Amino acid sequence: MDEESPVHHEISATTTIDAPPAQVWQVLDETAAYGDWNPFIPELNGELVVGSRLRVRIVPPGGGGGMTFRPTVTAVDRERHLAWLGRLGLPGLFDGTHSFTLAPRPDGGTDLTQREVFRGLLVPLFGSMLRRTEAGFVAMNDALRARAEERNRAGTGQ
Image (cartoon, rainbow, N blue to C red; front, side, top):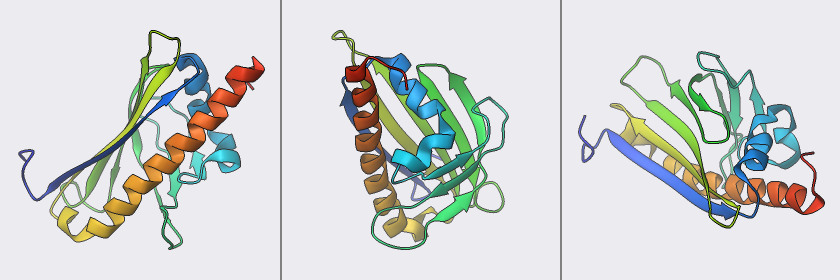
């Protein structure tokens, strides 16, 4: 599938965090605490290791009860990159590769990019959901930034 195909859509959101990648990663890695701070993914169960099956509940802004899905972790590079692949039904109908990329900044902070690439025959039918998902990325990035920066100011990992 080429990048211009109607069966391909990408969304992303980037934020700058005044905390080192190790601290940002720690917040991402503490999945049991997502309900305490994460407005977009209030529940994530499972181990962040390649091949692990997760249980993820997302609640995009703008109403609705959200949805739960079971993606498989496809990449883990501690303090740098995390990715998983989720599917709706059979492969090729509606697949989403979700990723977090942490890039160290010269000032000691982190640039965090949350991205999802959707592929499949059903992608054109999910336009409004994809827009709400992008708003969810922004909300999650803002909340993650606040939590990591608060820990950084306090000088603790917790």
